[in-house]
Image 1 (cartoon, helix red, strand yellow):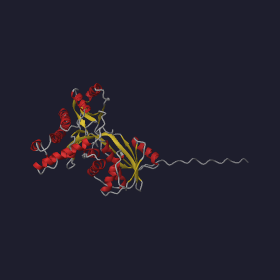
Image 2 (image 1 turned 90 degrees about the horizontal axis):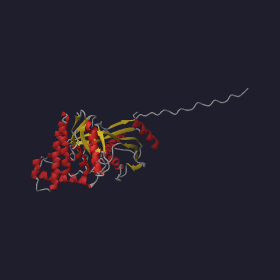
Image 3 (image 1 turned 60 degrees about the vertical axis):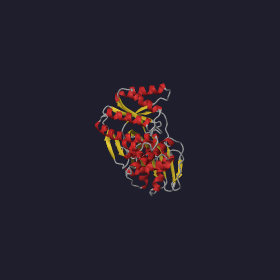
Image 4 (image 1 turned 90 degrees about the vertical axis):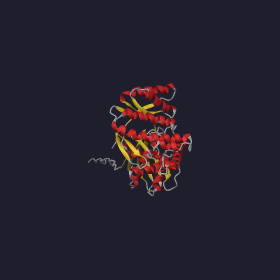
Length: 407
């Protein structure tokens, strides 16, 4: 039994006075390139990271659900057979997944669950998808539902989009489910086909830089970007009836809708179109181990996200500027939805001290909170198993010998 499982099953027993039946975990992800393309049915190139969300649980037949996170003191409760309503906390992601199981005709009973989250919240590393995927696998295993990874990805994405209210794409959930250790994952977000891309990094590595700028994906700005893309796609469809999303557009197509949409809408579309092109090039470069060329695409992606999509911030820009000024750094860009969170950089391992020093100095000069720089390694995807834990029976003390009567 691994240490995490042992500690969680022990805590579960202490909290609920019951034995856990199922153990599931799902990783966060970092996106190497391909931002805001997934909900436009485009291409993405993320990888899973080592930090995961874990859950141990057991069914408690009835309608009561009791869940607890190791990060919070309170045990949360809701009834599975009553209408579920969000309460703007981490519980929404669990309720959203349960709600989708029920809406899709998959029966559930009550359950008790304990969660442990390693994926930092609000940094663009997809803590929400890790929580959703771990929950979905746990529910499937406990209540006998068989879902393909693609079905689970769509179910959990719908939970976040419709219940939580973040109109995300499917990249995060697909990555959490299907990632392979030592590989990036190329995903076509239209048909959900994917390809495992070996990371030929040699003496290089990917690092994340936590800017300490918390981001809230539920904010209006993120959902507004999707609405703007839909407006651009609607204009495009008038010139090309076969085009259903920005996935179907090239730069020449954008010339045809000039004057029919605002300059802002045109900029949003230009980012998506050029970002899709960058992802396709990046996939091939990564296969070849052409790291300097791959890094150049990362820089181009950040410029597009900053200028056309307008989802960067001054802290993320400072990280990228420090990367450009440091020898041995191939490329850097914001990762995740933007508006704060993390940047990702590709660099030679020998350049890590200098890069860390450069970023730290840039933040200190602005009197910002010191950033955190840490390596991210390509990890395996989600896992689930049914537990068969046998605790040693309590040994009864030997019977006391009765004192012998003296003759």
